[in-house]
Amino acid sequence: MKNFLLVIILLLTIYSSTFAVDYFWIGGSGNWSEISHWATVSGGTTTHLVVPTQDDDVYFDANSFSQNGSIIRINSSAVCKSMNWTGARFNPTLAGDFNNLRIYGSLTLITAMNLTFAGQIYFESLSFGNTIKTAGKQLKYNVTFNGAGGGWTLQDGLDVTGNITLINGNFYTNNQRVTCSRFVSNNTNPRILNLSSSIITLTGNGNNPEWNIKEAFLNFNAGSSKLIFTGSSTNILPGNGLIYNFMTFEDSSSTHTLNDSSSYKRVEFKGNGIILKNNYFDTLVFSPGKVYELDSSKVQIIGSALKATGNCTGSITIRSRIPGFHTNFAKTSGAVDVEYVTLKDCQTQGLAIFTARNSVDLGNNTGWFIFRASTLNLYWIGGTGNWTDPAHWSRSSGGAGGACIPTAYDNVFFDSNSFSSDSQVVSINTINASCNNMRWTGVAFNPIMDGPNTNSISIYGSLELSSAMILRFSGLIYFESQTTGNTILSGGRHFIDNVIFNGAGGEWTLLDSIYCESSIILNNGTFITNNKAVTCERFISDGNKFRNLYLGSSVILLIGSGKNAQWNITDTKLTFDCGTSLIRFIGKDVSMFLWERDNF
Image 1 (cartoon, helix red, strand yellow):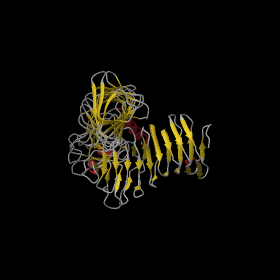
Image 2 (cartoon, helix red, strand yellow; image 1 turned 135 degrees about the horizontal axis):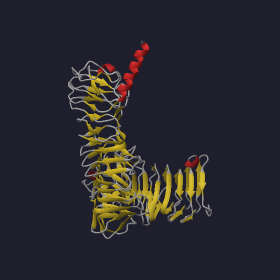
Image 3 (cartoon, one colour; image 1 turned 120 degrees about the vertical axis):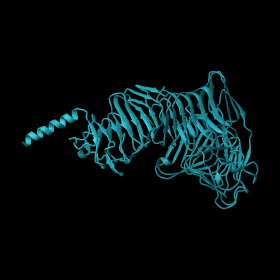
């Protein structure tokens, strides 16, 4: 008898899992895995023998709950065909933590429910015609579409706290809003992604690409959609050769990267930007006070407009990613007019006229008509503040604030009228502060120049520090002059990060000893130690640009151990005069790299 009953149960189980049936939730709160909650009809008392399978539609309706506070908990991996909450009363909650929910059909939620389920949701249908209606509920973790040949169409907005991933199948946003941390479809399965007129908001921050699309076997239609990136330091892999409509990088405090060759109707950067590879932009928008680096030897084609209008308090920097190598803008006809920009290593192509007004030419720009901005003398006032705050810059010592933020043409002064109490701080709060000459003559109250190692200072003239100030800035310091006669007076201050000489034709002479806690690097130009002491971990001049190094009778101290203490010099395009200098290594297992004709 027992064996007979087991056979019957087994047959019923096979029958139930082979043929699609409807499952109706009953009895209020409970776990998904509890058979007592799955009735064969709405409000019925006869229950199924097994939990829902991928062939079974599940319903939470008017007969599922009888009081407020009911919770259905997905307590193990759950599957169903379609899930429908239409008609459910008393604001029930679908909950659960780390288990997965796999849906092989459609999903219909309602406003009169709560959704706290925090597991992965997979849509895995193998057929077209599936719909998703979330009724304003936020899906709390990742959502994945992974059904070969499957198709899903949104009926309202889709808000996902985690990632949306399209692995297999066809996803139609149907003009609805979509919000997620990242959108990923970087495989080679056949897929369709149709964005129609949707607004897609990506909230992720820079650790992984926020939009990561691979074009292989992807049928992509951007329609009239808008992609809005709100996170910091976003990284976009848009898929080689795809065509987009609008794209905006909203965060203004970080650097965003566009990292593939594609076409865009309009792209706007509100923060700093990096553009890689060759691209087409009908309209490309850069924002005042920001820095834009474009891939060297690549071409950015402008169909209609390059909108780069800075101002006196926020010049726009546009430069090649590799100094000395051109990046290219191309436009077949018409004109490109920009204003208050700083250009370096930028070349034009095509018949359009490229004009930059009130701008700074940092060299190696071809095809541009650059009308130089006036040189200003700018004085720091008001004590503690940020470099980019116009309120701290005046046209006269101790005068009114509100002047321009310094460019590479402007001389900056920190003097007796700059500070009014001890240890006030000048913060280098931009990734690339710049000026011509910088002088700290006459400062009082031991002011501090500070800033993180993610930022840098480019000095296009001379530098004069003071023993009555503190140098706490931990970023790179570039000397970029292309003229002779520049001087460096350190005032006994220590440079924390690398000091880099990088100006073609530039010349710098030490007026006192220089101490760098990291590397001194001579990439370009002439460095004259002028018999002064030089202390650093590494001295490097191993590039292929014209350099001159004159050591006189200087004592060069290289402090560190192993590869942290180096003298690394190559002969390519280097004129070297060691004079009567002395090079001393202080540390263990130090390194000295010389070209074969060095004489010391």
